[in-house]
Length: 339
Image (cartoon, rainbow, N blue to C red; front, top):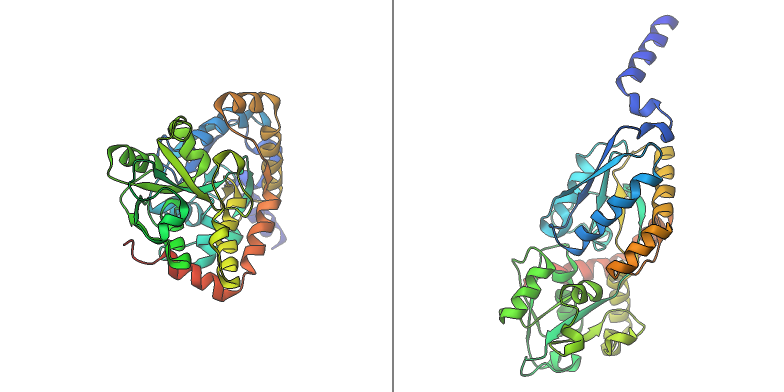
């Protein structure tokens, strides 16, 4: 019997060579699939391809990276695939919307994952979020105008900041934001702003500025407000918190805006061996701190702010402790009809 047990163990080890290898040997000669919830050309895509050029030299074995776009349902399609189907050995990475951890905690329609069971690798960037309007709009000249006049904004699907931000602000503060869905990427909504199909949009400030760097400076579009508590000086815009009137509104906005702290999160599927997760987290940190990486980031106009995998886990666990009534309130607002 003992001999049979030993033989069985040897067969199992042979059948799963990846699990038997030390973490620093496993990736030699392998290729890592980098799966994105974003479409090609979107800022998440640009970031992933930038990272994919630098990551191999910091991972033992120097594996190659291939980027695979899997857009759909505000990053839910890719996130569900990463959680339920992707190999759990470290050969598949994910890049998903900063909204995804909150969407998972809220268990909105279509969610088939638990954000606390992912292995979070970290984020290379923190950003700001805001709402914008074309300056040619006849009635919307400042944020306060949104309480008396309607702004037609674009949406990119459930789970995306572009869709959820105006829905939340409409339900929470009474801003007259009408969402038109059907845009695949934030850039598509900005094209629609150029043609007059849309009046504005809500997105990250950096993404909006990167698409048309001259719009704000030239006065083609304006930042109506940002969603952080503190002012973002270069925007010249107020924070939306100045329109908050009750503690309930503040707590709700605090929970919704907390997703900004997730940055641009990278993850591994559940159940990847702990030793491998730890090694890949350190490799990611080494990449982000690499002078060559930072030099290229500066040329691309990227601002680097490292969030470690452990820090992301801590933030998500803290969000999990939000009173259920607040989470339910946010869920109801972001799932409301677009119009």
